[in-house]
Image (cartoon, rainbow, N blue to C red; front, side, top):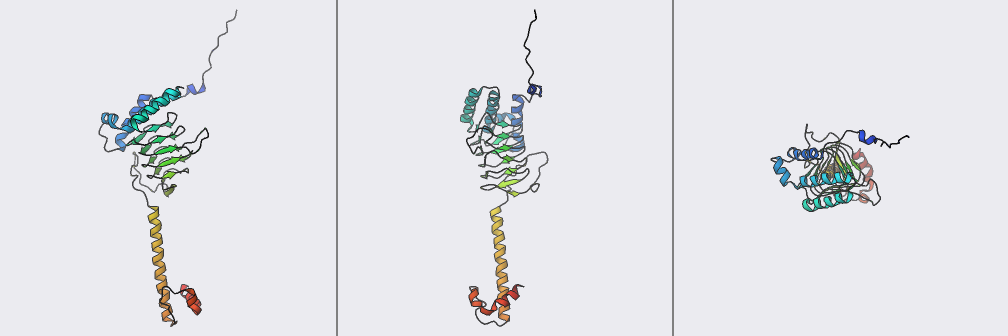
Length: 269
């Protein structure tokens, strides 16, 4: 009599190499703080006094529960972490290695957000969604992104690797790698490879941002100065030509010029 035994088939995903343990991830999160915050003096002090680290630890544990199918305990633990650290990270979010939230207050990271390795967020950052439909609705931050205080990154967009987002900016479109974006809505104001590189470390000089409004005003002032100089030159030519009237009056209208149009065209030439 034959005996039939059901042999479970191996899941192809089970063949993938196992990722780092929970303790290894938390150790990386703590160790990276000294590279990005000069005020950090030791790992014990960092572990006990940094709310950003506390928030990440709560997230790591809740994320493990979420992936194991324990959705309600994961949400409950996530709520507890938010209550204690003032940082709201959904347990379904995917966050890479060496993640650091400086000052750890008011940060919100949505369910479908994805954060790469070596990412730094400052207080008040939101990685939010823009619609109610299920599926991917939160942003993706690639490796080595730095997001300044109060910045909002909204929708299923991608912030390229190595990019920097200025404080209080609102990013609603994807950005290429290695650029700086500022403003509402955010625009690229410093192209690839034009900002300072820090070999082997995260570029934390997020205060070294260009001033696009100031640059535009400077261009306008230069243009006004050029036009005033050109007007002064034209008035001088008219006086030398003996043209009667108010050629030296800056308020002279075109109707008063009469037959001087051809002479002004000659001056312009």
